[in-house]
Image 1 (cartoon, one colour):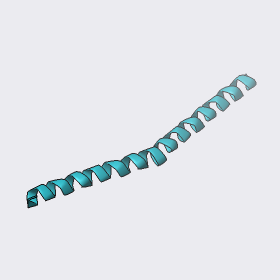
Image 2 (cartoon, helix red, strand yellow):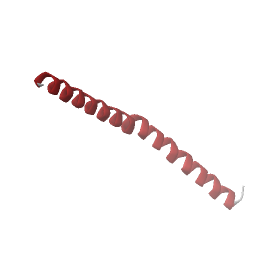
Image 3 (cartoon, helix red, strand yellow):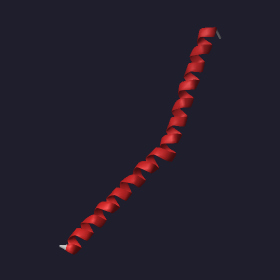
Image 4 (cartoon, helix red, strand yellow):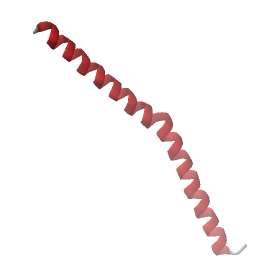
Amino acid sequence: MEFDQYLGFLAFLTILTIGFWLMIFLLTFVVPYWLGGNLIELYKEWREKKKASRSA
């Protein structure tokens, strides 16, 4: 294995590792945060709509 092949292999491993950890980060933090925020906003809208219909 020559030096340029070694550098290519290291670049491949680096990109693969970055992609793996990015996927883990997205699935364990970003997606639940996004879904939780959406659910909270939907609940607030539902509560406001219910309050508006009750007072009208």
